[in-house]
Every structure is written in structure tokens, then in C-alpha cells.
Length: 85
Image 1: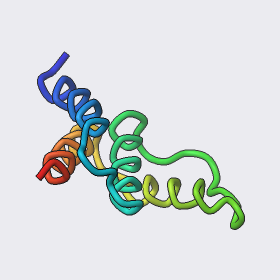
Image 2: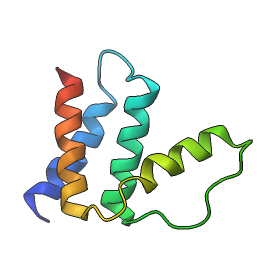
Image 3: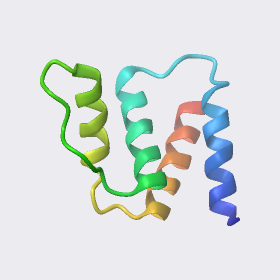
């Protein structure tokens, strides 16, 4: 495993130990970066208008289209560090 993958996994664990829960926008950003890093570009259809959470999560992921897995991992790591303060 590469050092970046190890750091990415560590960042995922660090999120769980933050003193305060990140706000909804931060959580959506984390979700999108995580999905882009682990699965690549968004797949499937956009959830319907009444699925507010699903739609927001899909949009957060879809706006990262074209971002490489490595770039998404690094952005995720950097954002976790920012949240840690």
C-alpha cells in the first residue's frame, strides 16, 4: 500500500474523533471526496427531488467528476487536517 492510501485511511479514522461534528456542508464535501477517491466518477442516476439527502450526496460526489483518485485522496486528507484545526 502506498503512503497516501495509509494516510487516507488514517484520516477516515481521525474524522470519528473530532471534538465537534462537522457541519452538513463539510460532511457532504467529505462524502464526495471519499466516494471519488474510492470509486471514481459518480455513477447511476441522480436521486429524485424528494430524496433530499441522497440528492445532496450525489451532487457532492458528481461535482468532482474527472478528479483522479490520488487527487481526491489528497484533498480528503488535507480537508481532515483543516477540520482538526
